[in-house]
Image: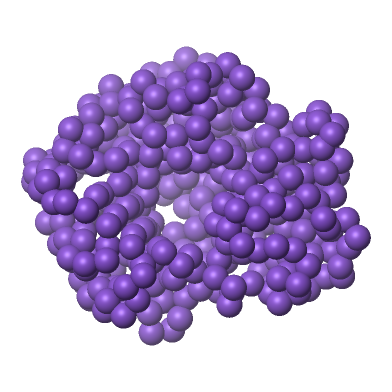
Length: 415
C-alpha cells in the first residue's frame, strides 16, 4: 500500500497549508524546527487528520510532529535511554539488558517522526537497511537458541512496520517464533496512528491468524498512540482487524508537554483505549531529549495529572502505571510524600531493572536494584524532570548531558 509522506522544506510547506497555518504560525514553527535535531516528516493522512480536529486537539497533535514553543528547563541528551551502552560491535542490533527479553533493532527508519522521540540520534541518521534484515533475524535466532531462558522478543526501529513489505515482516516474525522458548513476539509501532491502513493488508492478517492458532505463540503490537485524536475511524478499523486475528494491542503513551499533559486529554485517551480494546500498558514521562526540552514536565506535575485523570476513570480504564525510563531500567512513580501537591519525597519502584552487569557498582551499593524493589528519595518540587535529576540530587550515580555516568557522592536522603 502506498502512502504519501511530507518531508523536508517542501513537505513542511505542504503540511502548513493542509493544517491552515497563518504566516506567523509558519514562521514560528519553522524556527522551532531549526532547534530540533529530528527531521520533519509526516504522512499526508496524518496532516489531514490534524486538519479535521477542533482545538485544542488540532494544536496538540501538531505538537507531535513539530516542536511547540516553550522554555527549555535543562539540557537533554542525544541518547537518553543509553542505547549505545548496550550495543556490541558485531551485534549492535541486539540488546539483552532485561533477563527474559531480547531486543532486536531492525533499522532507524520511520514513516513519520515524533519530535520528542528518544531515538533522535539514530533516526536523524536513518539507515533503512533492507538488505540485512533476515541476516539480523538469523543472528537473533542463534542468540535465542544459546539463551533458552529468554521467552520473548521485542523488535523495534525506527518503526518496524513502516514501509516494510508484509512478506518481510512475516519472515521476520516467523523466524523468531520458530525458536522453541519464544512465547511472544512484540513490536512497537506508530503506524496505527500515522498509516493505519497498512494493517489492513490481507497477507499480514492471514499470517497473524495462523499464529493465533498455534498453541503457546503470540504476537503483540505496542501502539504508540499519544493522543485521542489519533484513534480515527481508520485506526479503529485497523485495530479491530488485528484483534480479530488474535493480535494483542497495548497502549504505551508518553506524557508530553503540549500534547497530552492536560487531565481532559488524558481521560479521553485512556477511555478510547478501553472502548477499542487496547490494553493500557503504561504511561511514560518524557525522556530528556536534546533540542526539544520544552516537551518536559516535572515528575510531580506529570504524576498529578495522571492521578487526576484516573480519578475520573473506571477500574479497567486506569490500569496503566506511570513510568520513567532510564539507562538503568524502568521505574514506576508510585507517589509523593507527604502529598502529590506538596512533594518532598518521591516513591519509586523498579518496574524492571537492567541486568546487574549494566548498573554502576556504586548504585548497587546504595539502593536496592532488583525488579519490584522500592525506594524513597528526596525531591524538589517543580525542578526535577527526569530520573537523572532525582538521582543527582540524592547523591546517586546519574547520566549527564554528555551521556557520561557520574558516580556522584552518597546522600543521607536515600532510604
